[in-house]
Length: 79
Image 1: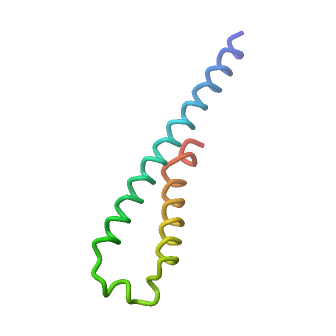
Image 2: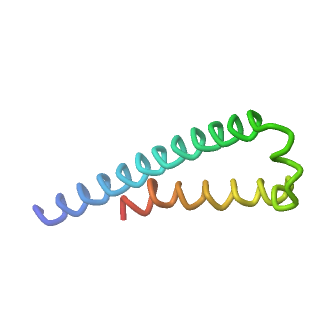
């Protein structure tokens, strides 16, 4: 009976841990996206004349960086 109770406790706490770390990862991702977008909008026009700073490359950088950040601060920590 004790082992069943410990198993249920471990299951419930594991689910809560994964849920809360996932929420933390999402919050960090949202904040990073917002800050990145503000930083891009505050750039001078000359920044966007660089051929390596196309809208597609900025969107790709944002997507990859946010995913990496969310993985590093989110569910992977809880595992």
